Image (cartoon, rainbow, N blue to C red; front, side, top):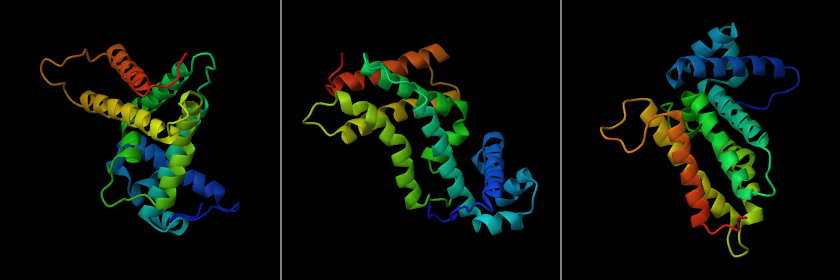
Length: 211
């Protein structure tokens, strides 16, 4: 992919992977604030010169990491089996995989979907990549149950923003004490139940052809 971090040829693919694994380790262990050229170099067991040579600088590293995180989300989505006899359950299963992915690493989720790193704006090509590797998988699940007069991309967008909003609020509450007299329990089961109810509500509201 022609982005700011450049294409990886066969000769340096191993080095690129080592740096990406190092960047992921820094992100998971230190959060977005730890994503510096120096910290990535230290985690990879090399000098900062090596990072600059391979990626051209901090933004190049962050672009490559951004790409990798969406590859990981794609793998999560692709592993969710289809449920031909119950498409709503299949869509809900995909949505739940999104929630699990976010809960597994709130720092990774923030890096992907929030402006968590000051001064970093992902390369436009990477944004398109993110759409085609993740959002399109959701739309593919939605197409069979979308009425002919509706745009499945619009439907998929509304489902995605619903699950994104529910997950983002949950992560916010998990990171701090909930407000007084909060209307749901802050247990895993309660959050999961509310999440599932929200996804089912949007599916029904969109008038999908569910069985």
